[in-house]
Structures are given as C-alpha cells and as structure tokens.
Image 1 (tube, one colour):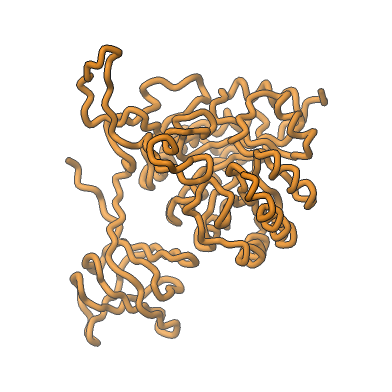
Image 2 (tube, helix red, strand yellow):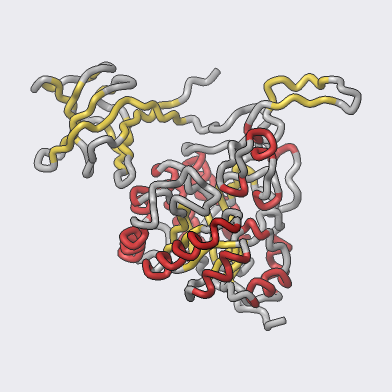
Length: 408
C-alpha cells in the first residue's frame, strides 16, 4: 500500500453540463466540467453534444481554462464494443482530459487510447483497496460512492494517493451508487443504460405483510432529498479530497450558473479565512431558489433517516417557478433586441425573465417592450413583441418568466 498523500488545499470544482450554454454559465466558477455525448451515458436525454461536436466543444472547454471529462458510464453490451472504440478514438483526438467509466471494457479501451480514466461512482468504490485495484487498471481518480461517511472518506484518504472525487451537491438516488433496477422492472427502461424514468419520485402506497393498506396516500415514499454540503465546506476541505462534484447534467443553465457560483464562493471564502456559517446559510438560501427536492447532507454524517426523504412533496420545492412565455423569432444585434412570439403567456415591464437555448443563457429584467412600433408596458399571450436583451439571443431560444410560487 502506498504512503498517504499530502492533503490538497484547493479541490477542483467539477460541474455537470449539458451543452455550450451551461458550460459558459459556469466558466467563471468551475475548474472542470463533466458531460456526456449522445450515447453510452446514464443520461440518455443529454444528447445536445455529439461525437461530431466533441472537438469544438473541447476547444471551448479549454478556451475557458477548464478541463473536460467525458462520462461513458452505461452498461456496455457486445454489440456496443466497436462503436465504443470509435467514440474513445474521437475523445482522444478531441483532447478530452479524462473519461469517467466503470465498465471494464470502457476502462480497457480508454487505456488503449492513452486517455486518463476517472472511475465512476457507479463502481461503488467504498474502500482504499478498491481504489488501488482501479489504479492497477490504469485509473488516476476514483469518484467515491455516495454512501460513504466523511469519517470513512478520511480513512480512504489516509491509505491511498489516488485522486479522490466526491459529490457535494445534487440529486441522490435511492439505490446504492445509482445501480437501480426499478425503472427497468416497471417500465422496461434501464437506469443502468441511461433511461431511468425515476419511479422513485412517484407516489406510492404501503401495504402490510397481511395485505392491509397503510394510510399514506399522497406520499412519495422513495423520494430522496438532494444533497447539499455548502454549510460543511470546512469539514470537506479538511478531508484531503481532490475534487468536489456537482450532479446535474440535465439541469437548466440557471442551476449550473448559481450552483457553481455558490460553491466557488464557499471554497474561496474558506481559503481566505472569511467563510462563516452565516454566509454559508445565505448561499444555501440562494441554492434553494434553484430546482431542488429539499436538501440533506446524505451519508456524510451517518446513514440518513426520515429527514433524508421528501415524502410530502414531489420534485421541485423551490419557491421560484419558471413560467414559459414564448420563443425567440429573430435577433437584431445592432439594436440589442429580440423579436419574441408569446406562445404560452404574457410579460410586462419589470418581470424577471430567462432566455435559454443550447448556446444561450440570459437572465434579466424586462426594461423595454415594443409592439407595432409603439412602446408598451405589458403584452399578452399571442402577441409578437420586441424586447431589449442583455446578450446575444438566437432563433428558437425559449423565454421564461421567473415568479414566486403560490403557496397552497
């Protein structure tokens, strides 16, 4: 067993991204981005980056001074092997900094293409000997199992000099290391092949062993809260972890921007000696305004009990709602304005809006509206309006209004 590694003071902040827009949203905060292409990923709906796009995307990643990690973490079947080789060859030529993998076929082929290998959390690495095993296969980093406590992570750190990466924020799976078969069993959509339909987020009924129904109608019995460790950065920093990872390759661009900004500030504040529980609490409030299922600390301080589940609410508990209002029809760069078709709802002066697309993210206040050549204060569904925008919008970008949810 190798000698313990000296503790690293500044961990790499690794953000999940789905397209160039979300990459751009975290470029000023994250050190690295992990992403997937349109195959061999546990996020089969994340298809906005393809093999053809990969060289250009990696050029953008490196242009921002970041590293880019390609997730190839689905089950690999015999008919996949040839295509897998082609994908890894493309990854190598595109300059991908590492491949996130756990299937031995992917590990072997990545090694053959001289790609750095990060072992996915799907491998459920839960001890130092497992970490060393993957090092023997050529891996340089392991993403540890999310079921480990902070004390267990410290033990692993003390007995291996492998790079260690841990999740600090985002969705938690109800199955160990995401190795879930519930979606495949119920709907024929395998979570291990990227098609999870998330039945753990459904309402469930509970029956006794005698077939008696327990009165829990309307409960989300398997719905795990999201992980949030923003209030425990000092403990994480003291554990000698090499990388902090944020789940969310399918989250919207606003989420990516806010979460990367909050964790960057927390890390930097700790390094400068200005981190406090009060400022961390404010950051947590800001995180809570983005999509979330409620927050917990997962397994870091022991096995979670009922407080780790969100049984009374489904999915997003953020107080902020994104209301779709329309779509960008045209953009006029000289005027800094966009033509918007209000297909879903109306907007008015002072509204907070978001304009999103695969390469666009603009969050701003509506400060100017024009219809038929006249300035107006509000527009209704069905109208075409001109809108002053704070960035470059593109045809078919979607427009949303941000508003507080009505409390029931």
